[in-house]
Length: 193
Ligand code: GDP
Image (cartoon, rainbow, N blue to C red; front, side, top):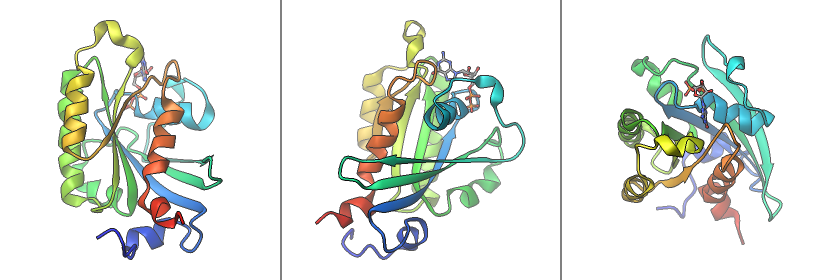
């Protein structure tokens, strides 16, 4: 099934004939307040600045990373910017997404349940070869942890997701998150000779 590489997703969102310079749409999902905007700002600008949040409409930022084999991956990052509740818009939002990053807050069991809801949505409406990451953010607040890493690992494994805990505040694992995603892109794997 993976051999063909003929889905519209790949031709539309990687720079079609250039497997060394990929461009991918990445969507962020998760409850409001789990730190999605902060993760993006940490990754793109290297800052933790909760006040610079976009409040109207969907925001869009991009960032390119280089991997060791000299592949570059340009992430076009879509953040819901507080529009999480407009479920009717979701299929448009997922459309053409090669990557989905589903975020919860390790101090909030509710946000972990909400993450599972988004995973189901992606399984229903997302591209079948979408790369999904499960992210437990606010790892710096481990003293208030209420979602066990083991529980999340288990859930991620069952759903074919990559799992990592991050802190947008301390920058812990933020770059690693995007590097691990880049390594898992099917476009990239098919291009290695
Ligand atoms: P979003 O609604 O998912 O985009 O969440 P935001 O990025 O706006 O963050 C919501 C709140 O969580 C803000 O007050 C941030 O300061 C805080 N926050 C985000 N990431 C972290 C983190 O890694 N650690 C801690 N302690 N707070 C965070």
